[in-house]
Length: 216
Image (cartoon, rainbow, N blue to C red):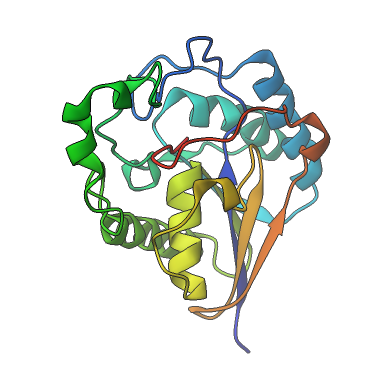
């Protein structure tokens, strides 16, 4: 009989970012109090799932999101560089025309190729590393479930590749809210369905839409 395995990709909770910079892979960006509440909400939501393997991005916000989940299951998460946030040349800057990086024409060259994209890590590279991490998690959780805490752009990019969407997209239309779960169900080593849920939907803050180079 073919084994059924589920690998959940969870986006981290809200981050404390009062200056509104694109924090990317910069260290020392931690969850806000609301972000911690989101993480606890997801831990409660998944506590009865058959989760036997946990993986986290090395960034603080991801590891802090994982903490209540690891506590619920009594598991020590693997820290995996393959599920880290996408690299971005606008990291550490505000992104905008009036008060952000785009007020300098010298930055416009970075936007020359949205298909790759020219301002950050190539989409195909993100897909490869994320798919490799998902496959490792599937193998370690074979016949059960695994949960990986990662970031919006890597999660949406690998999902888009799996579902056959083009990489060029409008970030405002990504289905990957804070503390959401994107779940891949495998029969053997084949993905047979993709699910999506928002256990912390009622906690989501109302914010202005992100510009198109953002990750998180």
